[in-house]
Amino acid sequence: MRAAPERPTTRSDSARRRRRLRLVWLVVVVSLVALLAGLGVGYARSYLSPGAIGPLVGVTIPEGATLSEIGLLLEEKGVVKHAFRFVASVERDGLSTDLKAGAYKLHVNEPYERLVAALQEGAHAAEAKVTIPEGSTIAQIAPRVEAASERITAKGYVAAARNDPPPFSLEGYKGGRSLEGMLFPATYALPKSLTARALVEQQLASFTKAFDGIDLSRAERANLTPYDVVIIASMVEREVKVPAERPLVAAVIWNRLRDDMRLQVDATIQYAFGETKPELTYNDLKVDSPYNTYLHDGLPPTPIANPGLAALEAAAVPADVNYLYYVARNDGSGRHYFSASYEQFLSDKAKAAANGK
Image 1 (cartoon, rainbow, N blue to C red):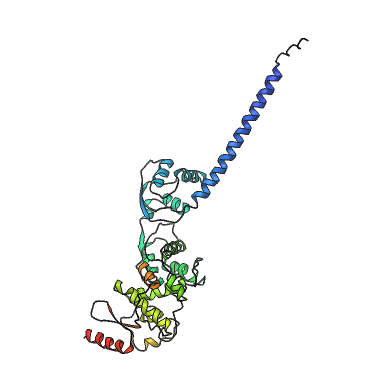
Image 2 (spheres, one colour):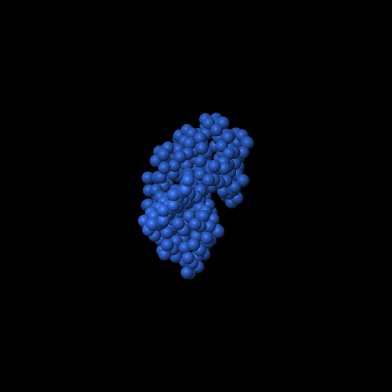
């Protein structure tokens, strides 16, 4: 049987094949675009969750640096995790030409919005910084911040730290109350774009990072909450001048709480007055305040200062001693006499009085 002769290719057949080929390429292109868009969203999400904010590092961006070069410099210093994701985010936001050259101080894992704001403002914006000493109160921190910052006022800082604080969780702490005690003392950069609330949030993050390393097992056995530990640490910070005495003063506070004795800590009286008096009088000890630990049992309602790491550690793990009293030696050393009995305390008090003559 003879095969039927092949039908010659017509012009319409060629056109159909070309249309099918174009359709295939269109499907491929659309698929690639969708894939890249999905990756872009993933990159952005990953970038916006960079992990814990780290220490400050120096980054110098030379004049004429391209966006890709800037991204690589930031990745090299750990400011961003991935240069490509940073570049993609900046291009997506239309800020490719807005980043300025200069010598910057930036945090490892700097949040994207804050990083871009600093790079837009220029290196001079990251130079301002404030150092908050251990044992400072909100009232003492506020003017320091105002003096160092071009944007944050003392009133604004007090509002963010005490009157309208950001959400914060710590067992024993009631949300919405003053954040006294958790505003971790350290040195903080103050770019122009930084608000009072953002600074307070940085301090809280630093506190959480430090406090996570504290051993709270003894406090739990003593029925003390983490917030109680912070309150004790704040008193230790204000009472102690010689570092070696921190665990000893903490032990006195623990022992008095255990024995249902009033704490009678002078620093709580000073906090009630809102100022540090050179010397408290007998009448001062009668001040009507919930912070007066001469009149009220137990711990004061909040911390009386913002303690550093050493005071927090001492408050959580005090010395294993039976002391119930201490009195300043009054000999210029900054040290105290410690005792377990009231009789010895009276003797030490007389000795301290003699030292001051």
